[in-house]
Image 1 (cartoon, rainbow, N blue to C red):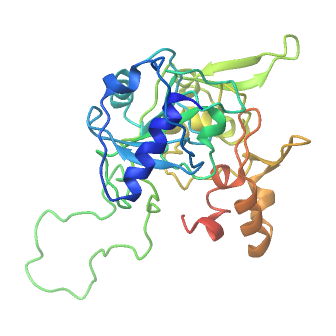
Image 2: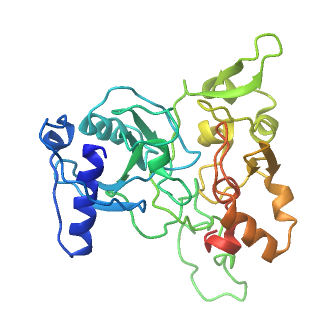
Length: 313
């Protein structure tokens, strides 16, 4: 069993004993010695341990996030990866490559992948050889994204006497849904690239930048209709959240596709799921959490349709 798994097992034991174990970045980066390592059973469940060397982050062993990759860096220390995440406004945490002996070989030890979500539900980090570091210097309670302008006009001066005409009152409906996860200022990388289509000639993805999308006369259509994923690339609604106005974590594109079955690589759009009755939707959202070629399960791809199961949105 891997050295780091033994460390995680020890940390998991300490957590259940109401003790906090702090691990320095120096200890974590050392290679295993030649001496035998105690072999202890390791739980497959995600474990969380505070890390003194990484202020502002909560370590979640064997955890990951589906479908919110910002960018991937190779050969970074945990501290370097945290600094990269801190420099990205919409980074809510980062995945970090760890040799868990997982079944997928996409990630290597010391890989660093900032995420624009901290929702680890349905993502088996042990299979992907990943740990997740959740950014904690953000709000932990639901918040509201600020509107660009006040919704109520402010009068320049009070009226001299009471009038029979009612003044403007706040609307009864909220303009923005409360977010279900901690939020940071929504931003995007102008040079960030999204997948526009697959080239018929080469079979390779054709990529475009968020900056070019801003001036596209078909902006709204592109954001709504372009929903392709690959292992390394995401659609414009994920990469260019400001331009596509998709910053709200409860945003759901009815055309977004999710993995119905992995055996036959069958995908379904969120609008198909939304038409199902509550019992069927709850079952599909709970059951379908696998990933395939970049596509996520229903719970991640269709937050509104799956609110019957998650209680969010």
